Amino acid sequence: MTQAILVLEDGRVFRGESFGAEGETFGEVVFNTGMTGYQETLTDPSYHRQIVAMTAPHIGNTGVNDLDPESGRVQVAGYVVRQPARVASNWRAQRSLDQELKNHGVVGIAMPGTRALTRHLRDRGAMRAGISSVEADPRALLSRVLVSPGMAGSDLAAEVATKEPYTVPARGETRFRVAAVDLGIKAMTPYRMAERGCEVTVLPATATAEQILALNPDGVFFSNGPGDPATADGPVAAMRGVLASGKPTFGICFGNQIFGRALGLGTYKLRFGHRGVNQPVQDRRTGRVEISAHNHGFAVEAPLDGPFETPFGRAEVSHVNLNDGCVEGLRLLDRPAFSVQYHPEAAAGPHDSTMLFDQFCALMQHHRSTDPGEGA
Image (cartoon, rainbow, N blue to C red; front, side, top):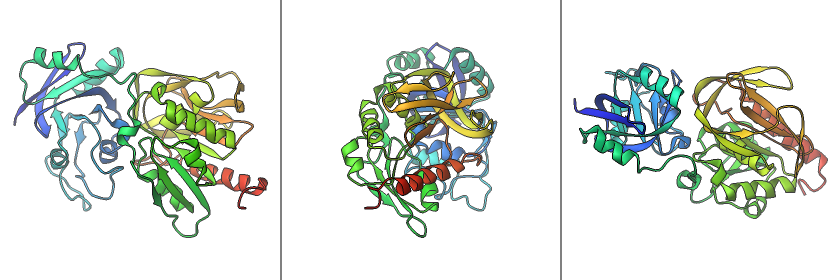
């Protein structure tokens, strides 16, 4: 096996063997705590320009298939695992994970120090890093890491979003028409809405409020995606125009951060983020706790002590993370709009939060029945 090195921007060096494509790659190194769903993780556009380290020790044992990807390619900048599966064993498997990474030119490393890496990132925070199987000198690789771009200040949504609109038809009878702004959308998200009778028109990240509202949708959705929400002025302006129209609006992950900014709130970078399928989130209104899927390195700053005023009326923090108390959801009290920081499409799992799509449909139904202009 070819030797490989992982070098962090603070100079920490890890050594292992090349996994996937040989070569060199750079990105922000983060860790994912999920024990399942590695194919969905790899193809999630929210991981664009990130090197993902898996905390589960054995990765690749179910192989890769053509049914589970969340986008058209592997999105991660690099991949770190402890022990790759020697054999892909699943009736749906079509090729190995190693071959899939090679097919997409994704450089990885298999190394014994994933636990040490995770502890280091928890102490020091997510940071820039490089993986190389062609450079043996850590100091030379570090010099290239230090000139690579960081995640803070990066505007990345348009790099992974669709360039042209497309439509995902409803399954069965069309009950609602949804305009979805693609900031890095996962394929399962419009599918979940289609299951509920929504015809979903997916629009580029650059879509304006005028372009969105020209479709006369029953509701508007803002997706997950990569990058720093502080740079996403275009989607924020679009969100404000949609909120002003009174259309039912739902955002997840990056869409939650865009919603927060549209309400006049700030965002900040988390020390090491939340990435995995085991984050406990509490609905502050009901007390119900959901175990949820996460992939974010930024969060919204919002008052936790009751409703606060926004340009669109009163709002409140609807959900909080029970691990660190950060904002996990927002809700307008005077308009039909809400958002969550996590992933209710449950790909891959858990399924506690899929009812949020039902809540979105209920908002659209209520708005249609109470607004005389709807359905005209």
